[in-house]
Image (cartoon, rainbow, N blue to C red; front, side, top):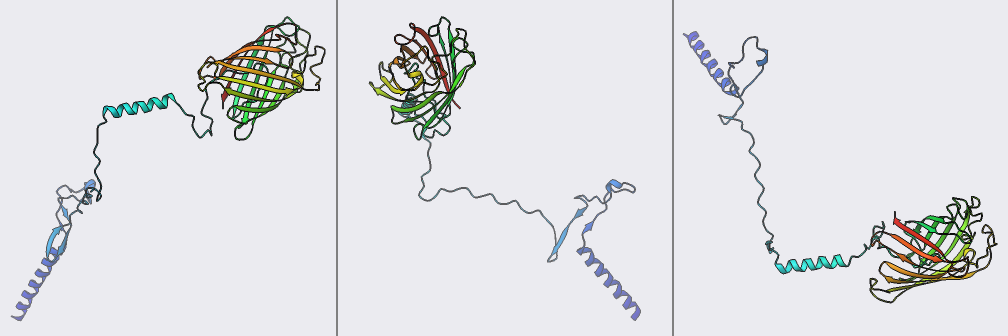
Length: 355
């Protein structure tokens, strides 16, 4: 009897332990897809045959995913602020804006920061033909020139000249330096390619005034005589000078006729000395002589020029045909009186660009 009771108690105890263990373990159901020999399904668990659970206070529940974060609160206006209300422009507002745009268009101003020299002034005619002037090239200005004469002095052959140069420095805040090379002849007055180097230092001393010192032909390249058997008499060696230019504003508006008068005066040697036909241009001559020019702005793109070179009298006009392209054309007559054997026609052109 005692053995029977002991056996019954043991069976009941094992049943209770098995039931508790079943509740504490995940429930696994055999998958219908797993078949013997199907390696692709080995270890595969689907949502229908596996469900992780946890026991909290005896309650079996499925682990759920974390809920999405709450949406940010809607922005609210600051205390005391007034919400912006879009308004439609009136006809008067549109007219005022158009008037302001027209004012800016009619009165453009150069940028205050001229670091990169992006502002290009309008092209202007020259107020000199042959003589140097107090103003000069600066601020990385590259310039070119080309000229033609129908005949040389005491000759019957035509000739041409060319030049290239650069302007450096700042003539307003410090000084400007102008360096150039001039091709003195295309083969008539002297051997083709003959020329000389020139240097000039200039300074602005006001809005309308400038002074300069220069040294033309300080180093020459002479490639023999030209077709007419003579050397380039227009460009003797070592032509140094000092010059000043003053521009008078006869009218406030530069677009009006006769609005500007430019007066230039200077002293120099070499090419500015009285002409001597027997002098050797390769040998520097001593002494000083006066020269001067007067240029009148007869119209916005045209100037009339009269000048004394120290050797001869010249007269001509200078034309800037394009308002925004820096091309200047100067037809003139030299040797009207003074040196030479009669008047001769010359035509010059020049252009300049910032880089």
